[in-house]
Amino acid sequence: MFIKEDLLGFFESMMELEVKQRDTFMGLAADIDDPDIKNILKRIGNDEQSHMGLVQRIIDLLNSVN
Image 1 (tube, rainbow, N blue to C red):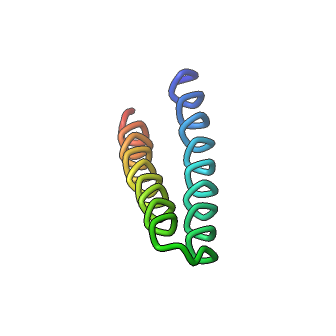
Image 2: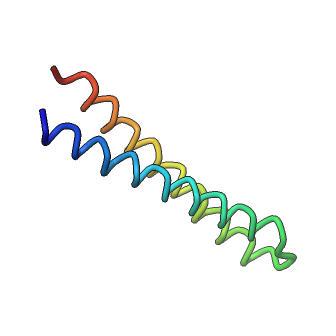
């Protein structure tokens, strides 16, 4: 179970980073007037959101293992 706890800690830390990155890119997109740059930043923020979903699935999977 030691490995499971290490993995959970790793992926929980990874989730925190993904949240910060998403918030940063979405915040930048809100402050930019150029529509092309705004769209690129929003797309990156949405990609981070997708990564968060994948990381959450891994965390859920690890939590379901006995």
